[in-house]
Length: 169
Image 1: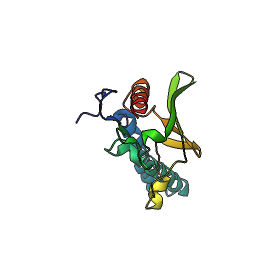
Image 2: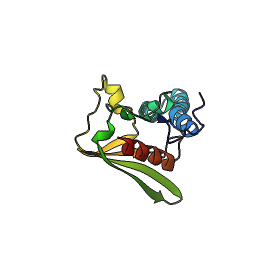
Image 3: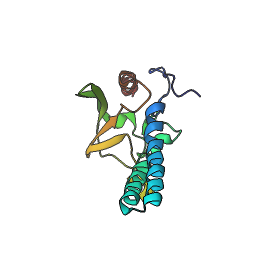
Image 4: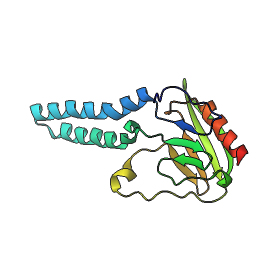
């Protein structure tokens, strides 16, 4: 399956994956830097480089989900599926809004999802998964912000799909 090809936003299911180029850079770069820092640390014997290698390794662990093959955002008739959250049924979604901010020449797109009730997080089985990155953030008990900038689909297409599914519900 080609994850770089856009999905039709009005189909029976819509999925957005991590943008391959960004994900691989963010996922592998920390480990490459760690290897270089460890090499320098062993050759020079300085503690600073060991500490720097540990920090970049932790950043690599934080970015680990970017390398996963599953879709972090999926929409179908059952609801909105976000990795790390239980399925949010369309009837539990009050409104969906596309918000964009600009930092210099970079556009950051987020989907604001207002819910009719509180957000239910999935039980995270281990401490490692609690430390890892996710595309959503809880901004209130009944509101989520989903970062669309690191996904392979255009923010407008994701918003159009969300609006299509909320209208159908």
